[in-house]
Amino acid sequence: MNFVSGCLLAQLTVLTAWGGVNYSGDIRPILQKHCTNCHKAGEIGPMPLESYTEVRPWAAAIQEAVATRTMPPWHATANTAHPYRNDRSLSREEISAIEQWVAAGAPAGAAVKETTARQSTGTWKLGAPNLTVEVPGFEVPASGQLPYSFLIVPLHLDHDVWVRAAEFRIDQRAVIHHMNAFVRPPGSSFLASFPKGRIFVPTVAERGKRRDNEAVFDRRELLLGYEPGYEPGAWLEGAAKLVKAGSDLVFEMHYNPNGKPAVDHSQIALYFAETAPAKRILAIDTLRDLDLQIPPGAGRYESKAAMTLAGPAMLLSVQPHMHMRGAAMAVQAVLPGGQTIPLTAVPRYDFHWQTTYTFREPVKLPAGTRLESVARFDNSANNAFNPDPAKTVRWGDQTTDEMHIAFLELVIDAKADVSGLLAEKPKMIGQQ
Image (tube, rainbow, N blue to C red; front, side, top):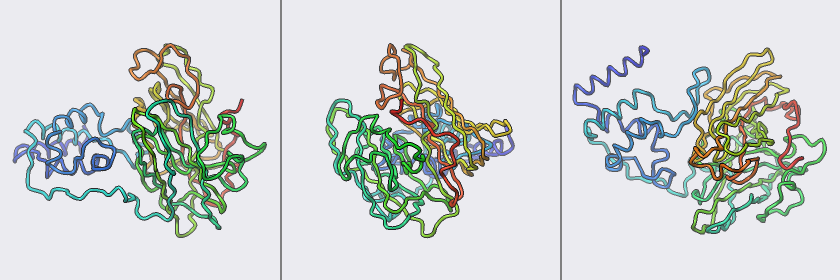
């Protein structure tokens, strides 16, 4: 035990001796820091936890959830060299405080003003946006397996815009597998033959079609993605994503029917930077293994992916993405001199809560850095979420298929030539 931990535990002992741990003085600040962002009216948490009246009936359940570390949802191991800005995990001292509080009968402590204000469904968490785009009423049936659907929306920008932040407001959260918003610059081959302003379903081959020698970022760039566990937040002070004049926004939408029909009107908000930033953020979805092939019954199948940076960059965030057989993923950087830097390790992946792990300070990666991802899958009968242990599983859109992607956000100089950032042109989905 280090000195700080010892002092905190000593303070908790004193609190117990002089009246004990209570809600208002000790537990409420913990919940406000780690829990109430989701556990409030209109958010993903199944019950609000903003007041003693709301918290008290759940005291024992809260204790069990934090003791087993199932809540707050945080699946990455601690990274002391490169700590995370959005780390939701509780410290041992915070867990101990909750355990002592429940053991004492969950006392209220001094009276505090109960929270009565509730977030309006019409409020954006990041404030008033410069531009919003809405999905025009996607009809989700009660049952069936839906393919990826797309919507191209012209942004009508007559000049280049730097987007410092973006936020999804998901309407029908219960039936959405994921939703991605891509920026399609002028002249791009990405879905070039399809109409604008109308939802359509292309084939996998049509989705992967591109021109010869077309640069990766001339085709499309991921602006923002939503999966269960998404939490809006600003990217990085002094950095932004570039949206060129004449660009379109392309929604990639995947819905999973849950027994009840629904009509989705999800929206995305864009926040413009007032001046051109010094740094540019690029979202990369090409650290992936399109050739994975998981044998029937395999309990520890490993899939590997790698990509090399031809130019220098900083790594802002990592988001592991797999489906129902996903068990674990680790991402590391191998520097040109051979030094290996662990970046993000998720030993207990949860498809139902997919976190983007954002570093407090972006990690510097020199030119020549090789980024590697290793994903482990459980296709055995021991996996309670496995749709079919007898199936050979390959890359595919549906949750009954699999994916291995480590989404990355890189930070480069705003004036840098992005066409030379990646050492190899990545294989495209649908490309043979």
